[in-house]
Image 1 (cartoon, rainbow, N blue to C red):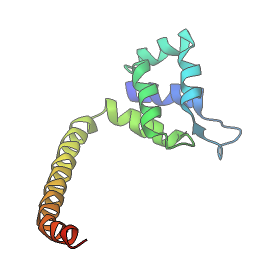
Image 2 (cartoon, rainbow, N blue to C red):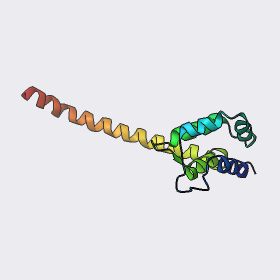
Image 3 (cartoon, rainbow, N blue to C red):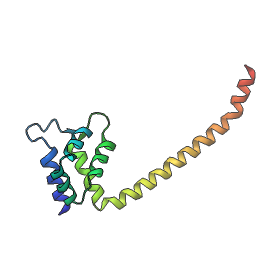
Image 4 (cartoon, helix red, strand yellow):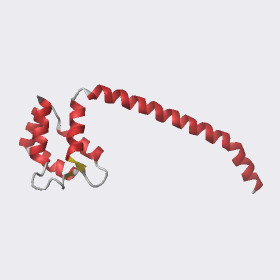
Length: 122
């Protein structure tokens, strides 16, 4: 029920029905909406906090803005069942990144003696 209300609220305030091709939402637009006390109250009634909305837009925005679909999907994931799965996925990805860095460290260590020899030759 909360998810539907959140989707409806975001649709009403961010989706441009007259121009669906121009559906990018910028951080500035999100902050302008969040300056409206009525919007903030409606957002909180859905179980979503204002800092969560601005944070999502800031994280997802790669310079041009965030699509409406991206914003809604991310908002639903934060409040939905996927939250626990996302946490596990993030932990898994962190472990993969750490393993990659360890491999890189070993590669650099193995190259160090060769670099020292090359430096001495100069």
